[in-house]
Length: 217
Image (cartoon, rainbow, N blue to C red; front, side):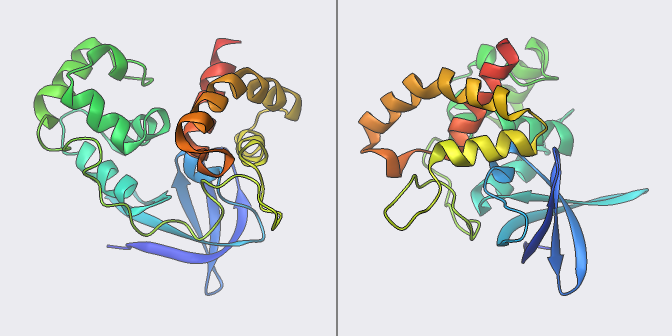
């Protein structure tokens, strides 16, 4: 198993990134939240999972070990392959998935593209007690790039900058990205007030909110 890759990001595309490792460009399929933290020309370290099929070897990349481990556990449920597991992590954080499954929140799970009510019920039945409870995940192996912090006096990008970059990397126009950011700012402001300010904004959560906002337009 390839547990992680570390190198210079060569390309960031809508579904993944190319990371140059020792002169070899590895194509890594990533969730939107992971892509939001990657910048072409910068070094990054991502947790990875190698999926082997008869006709392909596909490397999936994640911002931390908890996300990678959740991705692999999701695929133990019948009917869930790597693409659907990645879509689930594009809609929920690992803790969000644990909470939805633990609460048997079928309606929440059907928000994932490709999962209907029966599929959501099957996921709850097969994964209840296996994913654990919110907070159970041991987060480690985080990407060595700005991820959750907002702007600082050191000049790190704000959550708005990171979400904007993530949306543009996913193929959205800058104008659409700005509109989505404006739409979610009240929600993010509430998160800032609850969690202690700009530095505690979860960029992955903000990106998912922006994608939902774009989906409604």
